[in-house]
Amino acid sequence: MTPKLRRISNTANQGMTLVELMVVVTIAVLLIGVSVPMMKPAVDDAKRREASRQFNVFLTSAKARAIQNGRPAGVWVERDAAGGNAALNVYMAETPAPYSGDFISSTAVLVDSDSDGRSESADIDPALSLSLPFLVQAGDSIRFGYKGARFELVSVPPIPDLKGVGVPSVYTIVFEAPSAIVNPGPDGKWGDAGVDDDGQNGTDDRGEAGWALSDDGPNPPPPGTVVSFQIYRQPRRSKVAPLLFSGGVAIDLEYSGIGASGSQFDASLQNQPGVLNSQPVIVMFDPGGAVSKVYTGIYNAGTGTIPLVGAPVQGTIHFLLGKFDQSVPPPVLATAVSPTLNATQTNLEDTGNSWVSIADRTGAITTAENASGATLVDAREFVISGQGSGGI
Image 1 (cartoon, rainbow, N blue to C red):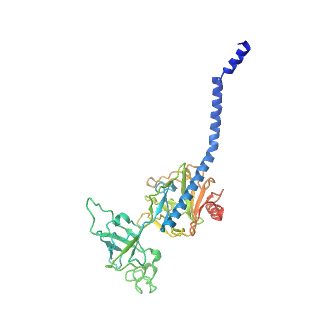
Image 2: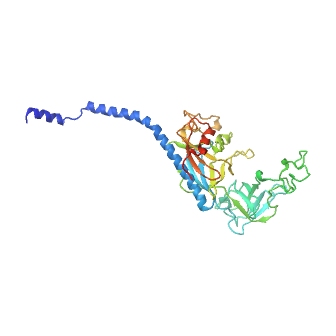
Image 3: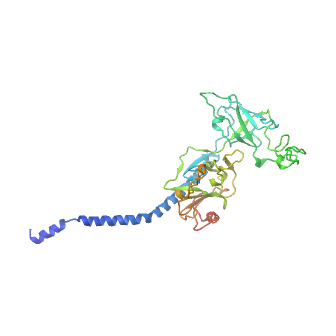
């Protein structure tokens, strides 16, 4: 081999030196370090868009279940922590069939528990309705004899210890008439007509509504009546696989609610010292596809609790999907310390977030971007103006 060819062969066999290799690796690391932060907002936006799409599909599936089964079905939005407004898990909700006892002969005996001449409770024979405490809970409603008004259950018997003390001789349930449907009765006068029932120097006023011996309604059957019963149960969580948000995405219930500016789902409006709102938000569709009821926690000053309360809805229901770390953490009322929000903006201010909304009358489900620089009212108006997408 000639000297010239040997020099060419030696040059061809030479690779990159260690210094050259280190320079290439350093440049690659610098490029990755610069590009990753630039890509993160796009990745976050994609995660939130996908979460909004999944929630839209989940709602649509719940609506379809209600139509297919001919019975109310919906979604159960679970709070991540008591008193907080972030929701990471969404479950299917279903309305169980009414409970009328374990046998066709099951009945209830109406009882005047406070000796005012009016029934406030009912005794039920466990021999014919053993499963009652396992299936019924406070907040359900009861109707007697397959007719008339429903009365809300405020107390139900505890689940018996079948291996220990055993089953009691009687199950006692306590109920009350919803104040929203109390009326003055056929005589048109509140309380016992012409009588100062409450001793407040007035007769037949609204404060005497439902007084003993009055015909104010609705009234349960009189004490001593033996009658069949039907207990209408509140929605329960279904065993269908839930929707679990990941990637730092959550539903922000602080800005979610009903109507143009409603914040009915904001836990801080119901939280009290020592009592935090841990109730979910439940949206139920009727068999026709419309929204039948929305359930949320409402503070009851009389009992000092926050029970789950359902009511018919008027107005579009809005859920804001955003970042978990932009949701205000739950208060720590026991130590009088409230964690501060470390995020630089709220979910309402973040234009990368999305709204998923449900029309109350039609059940139509839409998704829309969070409008730039908008107030809560403006953001929701943008959604219902028809600029959203998706849904049925």
